[in-house]
Image (cartoon, rainbow, N blue to C red):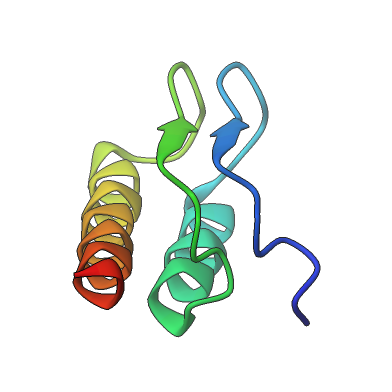
Length: 71
């Protein structure tokens, strides 16, 4: 734990991320594992649009939490 706390950008576009990978990423974002993440690329992956949207929503929540902590 605490290994990726400063990671700000993660590009996974053109990789083999599936719905399961998106679910794990969304869970990591929601749990606070990636608190500094601001930019996430998920273009052209085999995961469903719904899974990609779930990750985007989790990133939005994570970003909002980080902003609230800085306020």
